[in-house]
Image (cartoon, rainbow, N blue to C red):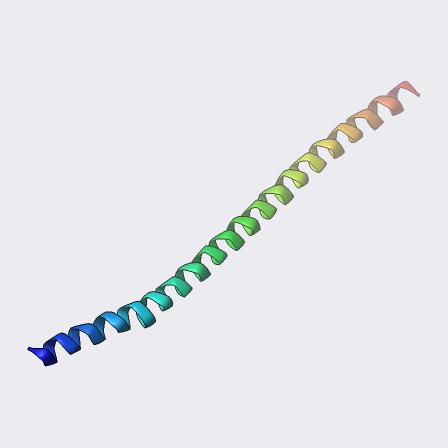
Length: 72
């Protein structure tokens, strides 16, 4: 019975000191990856929005130039 108790204690210590620490490290890395992905996606969305806005502004400028040319 003493051997079994020592073995259970050893398993508990391994779980607390090794496995749980490694799981925590993996979880922290996952959070960092998630944050980086969110930042990358956000940056990409911002860039796409700017490209759309620039395209709209270019069209507006083209239309204004055409109006100016017809008036002048």
